[in-house]
Amino acid sequence: MPAVNVPSTPNLQALGQRETLRERVRDALRAAIISGELEPGVVYSAPTLGARFGVSPTPVREAMLDLTKEGLVVAQPNKGFRITEVSEQDLDNLAAVRLLIEPPTVRDCVPVIPEEDFPSLRELAQAIVDAVERDDLVGYVRADHVFHLTLLGYSNNRHLVDVVSDLRTQTRLLGLSPLLQSGQLGHSAAEHHELMDLVEARDGTAAEELMRRHIGHVRGLWASGAEES
Image 1 (tube, helix red, strand yellow):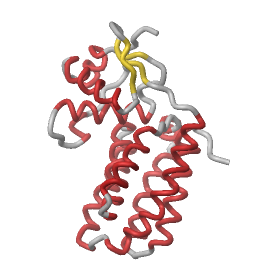
Image 2 (cartoon, rainbow, N blue to C red):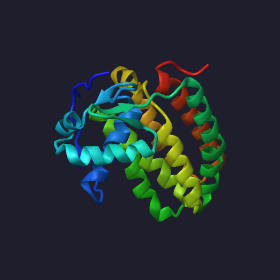
Image 3 (tube, rainbow, N blue to C red):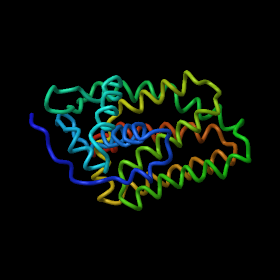
């Protein structure tokens, strides 16, 4: 399949400060793949993606090589990089594992999150809402990733956080664009403030239940554009 042009240009500055340009480009590419802005099965060339991000092809190639190790892309000699496809069964399995890990971990984290950390967590939740308001799917995916992994970090279990990070990376949220266009994604973004309300109320049980619904959305409405049965 030939390389294709990419229609829009995300704001790398809005994605936050990172150590290197390669990392900034890699994070943006990963989020674009998860959100479906870079389409499964399509081959993209490094020069085309470089033009999108306003950088030379070199950091794009370096970032894409990193993403091949994550299984998100496959190198196509003399063409570029093909975005890998994820089956419905794979998405079911990813959601099932996340349901086993994330809701009970959030429940256990709620009592130990220091009150002085509430404002910074609120800011992370607001970043998700802000991304929706500026129609930035890539920014939405990255802000959502940061918020949830930060919350899970209060478990003091680095291995658990790394596993969840990998599971989230392998997920595809191809239903996000229709949700954004219909205005429904804003309701989902606001759920993160609802979760923070429960955290501040020290209601771990309710926070656990909200996380179960949240992951259900990921597998249903967000992943495919049609709510789960």
